[in-house]
Length: 377
Image (tube, rainbow, N blue to C red; front, side):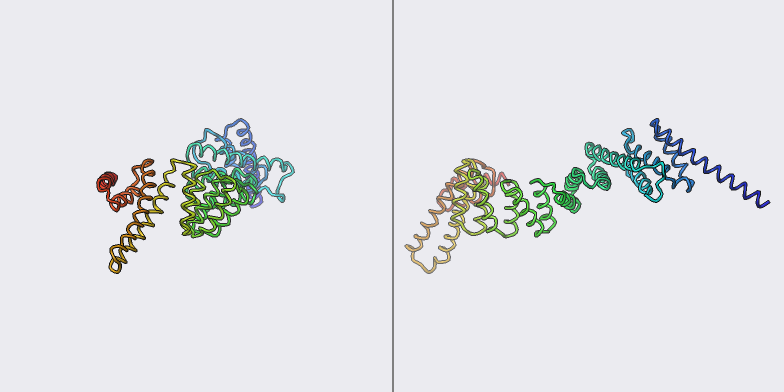
């Protein structure tokens, strides 16, 4: 009786296996005709029997079917799960268990289908402004093609837009390791390091970028900004002076040199640089404003000195101080008024200009600016 029961169970088991294998064939048939839902149902049923589920052909068809679902443009929902199932299935087909009927070309085809599906999904998500899903799809695709620079570039740009700065840094660094270099990559990577408090890395990236692209203006200004923010005006001045050799008629470079000179405390050189900037660009508001500020600040120091000494000096000696600071204020007025003609709405300009009018005995003009400042505030 036991033998009969055992034989019966064996027959049932063999029949189940045969049925599952039949489901595998059915799944492939459905896949061939584009009936992905039926193909998925059949391959899932076939995979319930462990002996069948682990067969190379079952795994291959399972990968084909799930990547096919991911490729299907009619399938609107996210397909991260389907892509992972497809990838896990094909990874199980190793050299040890690869069947004689499954060749390397089949395995390569499966990987290519998964890659194509993930890349296409990433592009679709990006075009639909679903940036987070797009980033995930491109990250998935890069597992399958580690040599495709476009994947890392997409990841870097998307991660930066999503404020995932560490991911963006990793992607940009990977591009540089792959010898994929552009000025924008160096600029973006340097700024990301700066924003995440990694000054040494930012300095390294800006330096490397400038060595690769010594004439790139954008990189030069980014490096300048970094130097100025991190207290390196001397380095900024040296860098700008080298840039000017390539582009001596660029007013922005001369203005930036003036800013660096101001930070370094070399006021005379700063004044010369700002004057060169307005010579090249007569409507350069910021340069005129800074020229006015140089003389305004000089006058302020003289006024303070005169006031500090007023109790210890004669009226005649005090008038010497007064004449000196009035001369500085008159020059400041000239530059401030040129700036005012270009932009009369800047409170940062109106306040010192009003002070100049007060100090130089022009009450009507001072009152007019007081009213303008009140309206702007």
